[in-house]
Image 1 (cartoon, chains in turn purple, blue):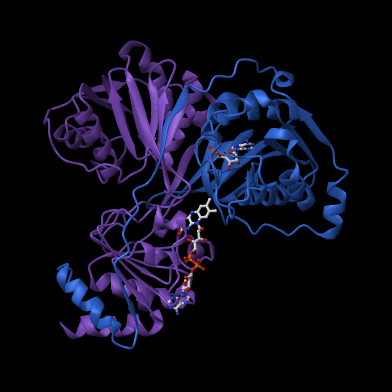
Image 2 (tube, chains in turn orange, green):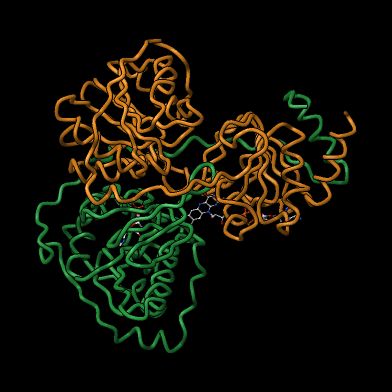
Length: 319
Length: 255
Ligand SMILES: Cc1cc2nc3c(=O)[nH]c(=O)nc-3n(C[C@H](O)[C@H](O)[C@H](O)COP(=O)(O)OP(=O)(O)OC[C@H]3O[C@@H](n4cnc5c(N)ncnc54)[C@H](O)[C@@H]3O)c2cc1C
Ligand SMILES: Nc1ncnc2c1ncn2[C@@H]1O[C@H](COP(=O)(O)O)[C@@H](O)[C@H]1O
């Protein structure tokens, strides 16, 4: 079994989602190699090697979207290198890459994977449907390489199989007209505190917070006091109260913190699929029948505009 | 400016979903609706054509049983015409097969400058169709757009990223996938709803588009209920519930 990972990076190191897939691939056995599009392949390769990657194909993006260049590069390599399975993170660039490569190689894709198993030549990907109520296993049929996209937080990243990976520089790739899609500017929004997907505590607000102006004093403040990150339901993202990057759920992020606090969130299946893997869940909702209570370890039936300020004061008073 | 908008007609998400005996999403129950995610593409296309001063908005949809309810909704918003691909042979099609159908339909539409799609459908959410269609057409793909502008034969978008957004541009023709909320979809007017009934609808099969062999390349092997999480303690707030939370936080050692 030879597994390839479409690696992504942040600040010169592999993203957690990348390392989660590397760890899983290592556990499945066989060889784990990576394809990385970026100008800092040497530093990214170090992190990949610490998790068991033995070879990294480095591709120069030349200003083009990473997924577009990555797909073209992989398409050029698979003939000679013959990977059995190629994994992508369910991210913006990962989705561009798997989509384009699928069409290039004429292979099906399985996306939103949350589990992965290998039995001889058979590769099965597990996904959740109907907001996580049901789990579906799907087997690849037909020719290799198989292409799968995995939702971040599906596996746990752990160092191991330490290697100093061989770095292979892939020459210029021709992405055809697709290569016209150039990144002209990058805008980075300021973020305080830990990343949503990596925070130990996540405090999320839903429509029940009442208005946009309540998000900062209630949700963000509580998150800050607990050294956590603030999240949101789609209802308040769609309403424009908070940016999309805060959305938890089926079409947002999956989080698995030690503690998830849901404030004024009803608990639609599409929200719960993104947070019910949390170790502990506290919910505050004035509707005692709200579905969120079915997953809450501690459910407070009450008005959050009263409970949360009192809670914040009590935590502050502890010093 | 001729724009194709991919519109998926899906079972109403407000109605709990079901799988058929062969593990496909049940699509023959209640009537289908226009995927809300695609209403943004329709609105965006109408605005872009309006701004360009000429051209038309053409809908492309692949759906079983000659389904038109969702298409009528989009036509009522103001799209000029629709191509509907409906074919029993396409039941259970994977995202790549769907993309092949859409790419062929774009060629059939003729003279297309731009294809718009949503970033993922609300029922299947594979999330790869826009990139697949672009690759099949050999066009650039500008994905996850939260802002779109067209000028001088070039499309420029703000592409959602983990950290914020990137400005990405390419020349036309191109494929753009738009995120929810990129524009405010209009409500069809009464006049629009009436006009939709007589707008041209070109219904074709896969074979009409020159697609014969359809292979899925994947097979569902098991479906099981997810393990349920147990509900814990529930406290009615009498003004002191915050204290119970404080104790809980102490037990977890997060404070
Ligand atoms: C295809 C699809 C994908 C989706 N993806 C996502 C996703 O990724 N993430 C997501 O979150 N949603 C998603 N949704 C939307 C989801 O179905 C719900 O609409 C959404 O999660 C509801 O958000 P909410 O709980 O904030 O709002 P509501 O459902 O309106 O709930 C608000 C809650 O606040 C409570 N409340 C009101 N006032 C107070 C108060 N003063 N004190 C305490 N409680 C109060 C109410 O009792 C209510 O339970 C998706 C939907 C679809 C169809
Ligand atoms: N059957 C279909 N008919 C028309 N458009 C579709 C169809 N399937 C997918 N699309 C388009 O492609 C987007 C992404 O779909 P998916 O990759 O299936 O999540 C959708 O939001 C639609 O815009």
